Image 1 (cartoon, rainbow, N blue to C red):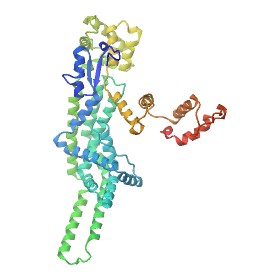
Image 2: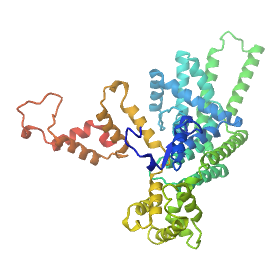
Image 3: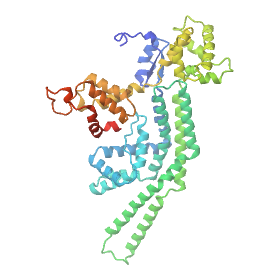
Image 4: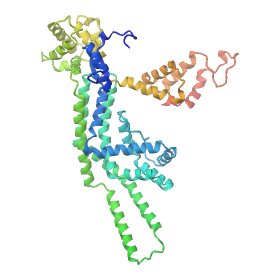
Length: 493
């Protein structure tokens, strides 16, 4: 491929891979063959993929079986309602009748880092509506799957597990979003990881999960009591009319049913045993998550040497004469082929001058901005070693989410119903999806529509315009604004 594209691999600084065995393995892999020929190439395992592996490993403990069971039930709920338009319509009808907010159920996809958190949150919000929908489907169609899901989702351990997953996965979601932003630099990765671990420990000590559960539990308890009351009424209706009131067996059966319903009502309440169980499982889950984050995300120490370009670190170590010397020598040793014409003393001399620049002139800039200034500004041309190292720091990728996001956009754009979409149009649509505005306001949308309308002659209706129609006879754009606002939903987000 490099020969076909006329690429010089001697200028290759690093490769970011997703962790597949054919990419990052020790033998007969793409990266091993590249490093064998180009020893200075840095192989970076995508930090977002490593975080995903840490989140998957943290829930594999034997003690966390209830959490895995809860994830499986959430996935079954999504499939049950998505696979049947009738089931989806019943759930949508119940959600529209309730005054409370609702969220769309999402699929739990292990390879998508945010889908699990979104699925759990949707299940917590929609759980009362889900119960009603499953009960209605069971009574009308005698669907055993609906009855099984209804019984599973009404269990206390399932509900308590959802709140545990919600709080922990929320912090992993925040860290994943930080990793996926394009402006992330190497010195920000350790700080982001430490912030995530600190938040997880805060959840553990502050009992945030228990407080959220207690706040939401009255809604679930009221709905569960309605189901119990409904069951009591159904049994009274089904009781035989011919049964004698003074029959001892009938009286014993009625008394037994009453005690059974009293136990069910008492089981709906959140007691201390439930709180202790949730506290125990949440502590185990948080400890396992922190442990696997440390194992997965702290194994690439070399790239942290580029933190010397952080002006804030240089300012904090202004009185330390030896600050950054070890990191500079490690980088010099690794890129010895590119910097072989410079001695270690010359590189350290450049570093002392660059350190003063970071403290005095570049102290208001972020790391990537400081590297860009050193790499491109003519005043730093007298520092060839650090000009190259700054270019390497800017070039070396931290994650490969951006290209993978492109494949996801392509899959959503080029659907089976649009399989004749041309390469050029697909490229234009992907460019808009990936590099467009995150939020399109009405003013910006009108500006785009006006530019599109005036770029060339446009037909104002689906009918073919007359060949004799002149530009003066066409409707001006100002008269079409009202129509655009009415029919184009994308203008108003």
